Amino acid sequence: MHPGSENGGYQVGYPQAPAAQAYSAPPPSAPPGYFGSQYVPGAPMASAPKRSLFAGIAVSDYVRDGIAALLLFIAMFLPWNSEFSFTGGGFAGLILLVILLTLLSIASLALPYVARLGMLGPNWHVAQVRMIRLLVNLPYALMIIGFLLWDVVASLWVFSNADAGPGIGSAMIFGAAGVVLAAQPRASEIEASSMIPARWSAGVRGLAIAALALTVISALLDLVAILTTAHQHDAETSDTLRILVLALLLVASSIAIVTVVVLGVIRGLASARIALMGVALAFVVASFFSAFIVEVRFDFFLASPAYMGAVLLVAAGVAATTPGQVFNDYGSTHPGYTWLRAARGLLLLMAVWNFADAIVSIGRAIVVATYSNEYGTPPLGVGASAALAVFSLLSGALSTVGTMMVRPRQGATDPRPAREMILGICLGLFVLTVARLIALSVMGGAAALFTRELVLPILPILVAVGILAAKPVRSLYQGVPLFAMATGGTASAMQAGAMPTSAQPQMAQPTHAFSRPQSGPFISTTPPPAVPTPATSVASSATTDADALAAANPQTPQAELARLAQARPDLRPAIAANPNTYPELIGWLQALGDPAVNSALAQRLYG
Image 1 (cartoon, rainbow, N blue to C red):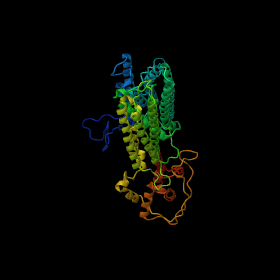
Image 2 (image 1 turned 30 degrees about the horizontal axis):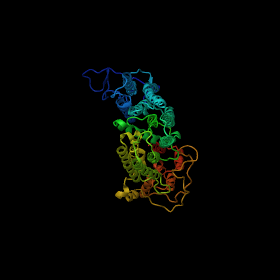
Image 3 (image 1 turned 90 degrees about the vertical axis):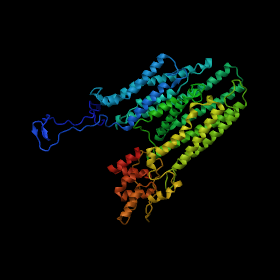
Image 4 (image 1 turned 30 degrees about the vertical axis):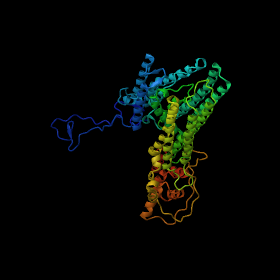
């Protein structure tokens, strides 16, 4: 039940304060403590405590509402396709429809606040407001689907007149992001037992699969269109085969890119969900810049290698931001490692993307070298294609190194990967991708650019921001200064977390914190191996302080953490929050039922 609500509903004046005892107003000359006709010496005047009508609304809900309204407003002024835009002209009726549906979706953001003010009556429930907001945003979503179908259906005419459809513009990306963000439930509306997050998680998977399916269908029809066009122009078989090979490389690269994004989402991995959110953000930013480049404004269902179901990927990525998602990474003992896996996923995506571009560039160089100009002169020559292949190969190799550097260091005293190396790789990738983008625009002109080209330089920025700013990652590296090796802070950091060693029998090595359990839930309930109890009790304050430091230090060996968990019950909350605590010990701590330990475990899982 929603806090402060009655029967799950919004009540007038929500939340209601306890009713104060009725009393008559004192006369003007009445002394303090006069209540009605009775005087109570020294008694203060009664006043009912006041609470804000919007108490309980999370800050994240305000942020979602603001971003959704901004995205929808910007989308209204961006081009929807090559034939229609609010500022560039088009059908008057369609312009009016876009304006009305945009205002309707923006107005839906006010529903929770209007309900709390009692303007919808006393019997409105949270679930009703949530459903109405979803239904109010449905027309806008159908309008986006209509624009998408417009391009698909019009593109099919390529088989008869060789003209592509109107394409999709930047407004489609912004609109899809805005309407999904506006329609999704807010954190203050989701109860612990609600099935809404599970349904949205299923929706994320469905949208991701649809994006992959649309990419495959577009790719196959693109190949058919090439063969049809070649037949209409009576092209030579050799030239048709060369163009077909190049097209195969292009569509295969698009399918591979989308598959890398979608595969982990289908498996329900939390790291893949975070990576999908990053991809969606990258497409939104890229589409904003592409809106100001005339030649890059539109992607087409046919004749465009950039058409990868981007609208659906963006919708899936924004839907993945719904609070309470049920995606999970098994084997994780700290949410910071889930974010590191997401960074590794984005770097893997960049590696596949760049190697695919390199293969396409090499194939283009071969095709251009043997071209007989049946279809006109290609925008890129042999030299330009070879240069772009070099940039892509270097970026792909650096991305591959990055995927290995983000992995936890197995067997090391501190298993956390070095953030400095990851940031250096991101900087190198940004420089290489920007250099390739500049070279592509100079050698091939703006016509050679696609939205996907603008996405590549944004991905390493997102990885770097996640490593530096994400709360779970900062929690994972708490106490470890950035660039410690360069500033000489490593030694001091090690000394701060140092603990005395004792000549105790070594326990059996516990299961590593990063190993995936063979079966069972996320947190294992298997108790840790027994650890010999020290013969003498620790009484000195110096040893006590050392134990407290060791319990919170991520560099403390797992065997020592197990010993402290048995010998020092007061340190169990700190051990539960320690990133190096292994799954069996976590399950053992959870089984104790200690509220402080459970609170630390919840903070560990959810940041």
